[in-house]
Image (cartoon, rainbow, N blue to C red; front, side, top):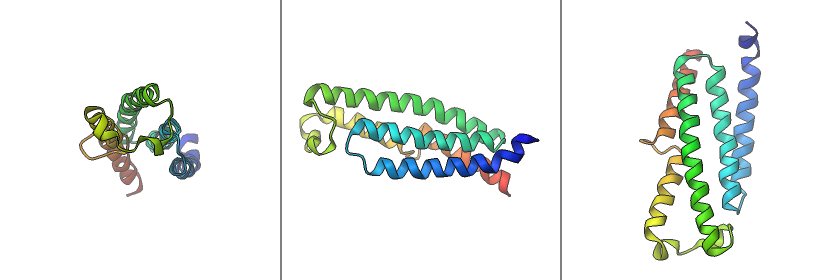
Length: 139
């Protein structure tokens, strides 16, 4: 009973957290900070899925957490490799990277697209299940 009473509060706090993390992510120039702030936004989506108390949303939250752990870990690995080579994490110094490291750039782009939830990736499936569960609660 109490969980249903406080659910709207957690929904509002999660939505505000997603918006704040997204706006903070947009203004970053350090790649590591970009991944970190996007992680905060993804965890806001996860809390929305958990507090909706629908099996589809809870399953989507678990899938999104697992997917996010794999994708964010891969992105941090990619950024670590770039840092070892260039000794900086600032975005503006990575122009022309595809001509120097084409295979690396392909994997980095793949993981970046998975991080933003490109359809066909596990992040998209998790977010879709969360949205589907929230629509079932509100219908």
